Every structure is written in structure tokens, then in C-alpha cells.
Image 1 (tube, rainbow over the protein chains, first blue to last red):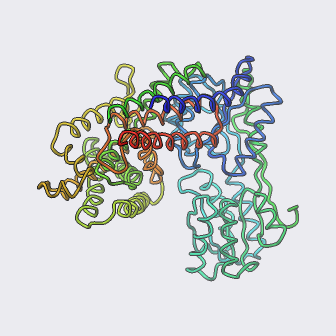
Image 2: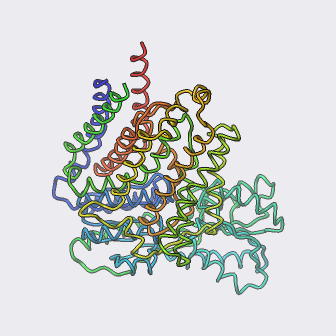
Image 3: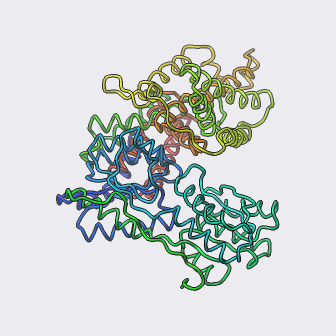
Length: 315
Length: 309
């Protein structure tokens, strides 16, 4: 029995030491280590962000540690990751919070360990952060409210001011989705011919986008346009539209301008998408972290551009 | 046999710690070990209930959803200004009731536990979403949060709570007739019934214990995140089953100990922590954890076969 246990441990040891070589190499040279904790790594958006961050880290000569929970909504796991990374003596923490309020509890520990915090993509809940005395050095991200407005204004223009809109929301209570939603609603408020007939969460996911929109279409056959708070949900809705044989008759506007969405826009099955530049966010986050480590001043808010992608500019 | 198996798991944990100690200077520090203990507490407590259920040859897939439901009830009670003691009692009651419903459906309805708890997993999750309209309830008083953020000496409160839960549950399992019946039902339900034990009643109780443990975990989780989330606790059932099984409890029932389960939960916690400290890619982490679960069960099966031969 001991043999079996022992071989199990040896396997684990071998696995770990092979991974460890990387950390040992970079950690040893006295280079500062910056951690980037993402919501997840199974989404192209965050994979792009990681790429941008890695490029910046290589250029600036810092070690980058990227970690993410298995599932985007698992804020408790994200908290564990932050706690564990603090133990390794990271010099700065860049994080895309899985929960705007919940993650504050983990950031308290970063503050106590004197690790400067860079918040990326999703803002902290201001009240929760203030109550806990957590201060982020900066926020790097796009203005999601503005993005929602862009999408809303475009939809009004594209439909000639008359539309029955179905909305696919992100996970309820997420600052990112809520801001996009507010921006969109504010933008279409002025257009009297535009009515929002249904608005339901599809939790950022493609398959849920499909199911939720299919149900929406059953309940409201008059829907002629869709705003999805992310492209994954928009792509799910496109499938549902195709299953209902209504491709082309429903205008779908998404968010993120993922490759699949850009393709759909070029093909004409999707109307548009608000492009964010996650790689740019990753780059700016690491640059800011390095500046903070060097004791340089950085602005409290670093805005990353947004751009509406339509058939005119989709490649 | 049982003791030997448990000892094996413990050797595994010690060896894992030893390997991590060699690989990273950050592992064997007081602050990191307390960190691991705190992170393990939620899974360890849920796994107590799971151990009771699996010992009786059952399974409980609804634990994660009960964590969420009990958590949001706690959140609502605190938000509405109920006194802390009342809110906590209410939370534990929700857990017990949910568990008892599982138990009654299994024992009196005669349904397979897998199906019953699969159903209540969805029902409890839906109820949690309904109660909160899908939105988390956040921002609680420090007097409540101390259950997660507080320290007794240098030991985090969740670790103290976990220790207390384990001591109590261990006494129940080893020193009470109820505890003996848990093993007996799992070992041979028919024989237990024939010997005059009220099997159906005790089975219902076993699931109620599991619900209660989920509620205790919900209290710590809510205090820790300072937020009651209706989507909390997803996949907790799998972590709890893994901890129980790594700890040497047989899925066939009748065999296993809580000490083993605690070691199982610690192995998972240490592994996650260690992989984080080493900067192992998130994807590889999942593979390693999965491999450890399979190897642990394989070990168990091989040992048993050897023992019987």
C-alpha cells in the first residue's frame, strides 16, 4: 500500500517540478512578479487579455503569473487564488473581479499584505470597497455604459426607429452587464417606436443564449431585434433564429466583437457588435502595475477604447 | 483494514506537504497553512454530511444548492434586520428541512437517492434564485462577518467551526446508536431492518444531517464573501464526494471514517493551494486534481481486493 501511495506522490512531484521550473527560472532573477487573476480562461476575451498582458510583461521584464477559476462565476475560488498568490509575495495584483462586491473580501487581504491592486474590466462596487477600506490603484477597462449606448444608438438607426427588442442579459448583479444594459436602455429611451418586449438573463453563455432566446421568440413572435450583453449570448441567439428559420429578419447586436461574431457580421446574419480590446486592457494593466511598483503615479481611470463593428468595417 | 487505509491517506497528505515544502518556499509557512485550513473549511463541512450519506450507501447531489438556498435565506434575514441568532437558527432550519425532504423521499418514497437529490438540487437552486430574483444580497454587519474573518488567537474562525463540527459529528458517528445505524444501513440495509431498527426514520435523519452541514457551510461562505449568492455552491457536491472518497469511505456504504474525510478534504485543499503557489496553469490543475481522485479510489479498490483475496 505504501508503495502505491508513494508512487502517487512521486507522480505529483514530477508533475509539479516540471511546472515549477518555469516559476523558479523567472522568480529567481530578482524580477518583480505581477499576478493577473482572470474570471476564467475558457473565454476568448480573457485569452486575448492574457496575451496582451504577457506581451507587456515580457517587454517590461516582469514575471507574470496568470490564474483563473474553473468557472467564471466562482468568486469563492477566485478569492482562494488571490489568497494563495499573496502568499507567494507578488508585488502587484491585477484582477478582473468575478463579483464586484464579493471579491472585496479577498482584496482586503491584498491590502493587508501591502500588495497594490489594479482592477481590470469589471469595476469594484464602490460602496463595498469604501466600507472595507480597499483602494485600487487604477481601473483599466472600457466604459461599459458607453458601449451599451453605442449599441442602442446603432439599433435605433439600423431599424429606422421602430423595433421590438428582446434583450439577453448577463449574470444578474454583475456590474459589467448592468452598465451595458443601462447604456442601451438610455439610448433607446428617446426613440418612441422602440419597445423592449422582453429582457432575460442568459448568464453570459452561448447555450443559454440559444435557449433563452428560443423561449423569448415563442412568447413574443414579433421580436425583430436583439441586444445581447455579450457576443457568446448573441451567437446563441443567432442559432435560435436559424432554428426558427428567421435568419436575416431579426437584427442582432452583440458586445465584444468576438471572431465568430465578426464573421457573422460580415456574412450579414448579425447586425453589429461593440468591440472591446481585451489585449489592450491586459497590456495597460501590466504597464500600470509596473509603474506602481516603481513608485510612479498613474491615473485612477484608464479607459480602453470601444468601437462599433458593423458590416461596413467587419473584416 | 479501515485504520490501515486511513493511515495510507494520511501518509499521502504528509507526503504531498513534503513535496510542496521542497518545491516552494511559500508553502510551509504558518500564514499559508492557516490559509489552506480556512479555504478547506467549507468543503470539509459539506463533506461531513456527505460522509454520513455515503456511509449509508446513499448519495446527496443537492448539497451545493442547499448551500445556496440556506445562504440566501440567511442573507434575506440579515438584510431585513433580524437578530443574528434568529437568522442563524433559520438558516440551519432551512438546511435540516431540505435534507429531511431528501431523506423522506428516499426512505418513505423508496426512490433512488441519486434521482431524489438530482431533483432537489434543481429545486433548491431555483428557490434560491427565486428568493433573490437572481441577485446577490451583500454587505453584512461586522458582528456576523466575524464568523469568517474573526480569529481566536491566530486561528481563523472557520477553522475553529470546522474542528467543532468534526468533533461533534465524530462523536455522533462513533458513540451513538444513530451512528451505529448509519454504518449498519450502509453495510446491509435488509439485515438492519430485520433486526428491528427503524431504518426509514434513520435514513431520513441521515439526509437531514447532510442538509444541516450544508447550512453550516452556507453561514461561513456568506460571511466569507460578505454576500449571499443564489449561484453559490455550484459543484460543491462533487468536491464533497471527492473528499469523502479520497478519505477512504466506500461508495458501497458501511465503510469509512470522518477522520479520513477530513484528510481527504485537506488533500484537495493543499493540492489546490500548492498548484496556485507553483503557478501551475489553471487547466493543468484540473487534470491533477482529477487524477488524484481517480488514483485514490483505485488505491482503495486494489487494497480491498488484496484484503479479500
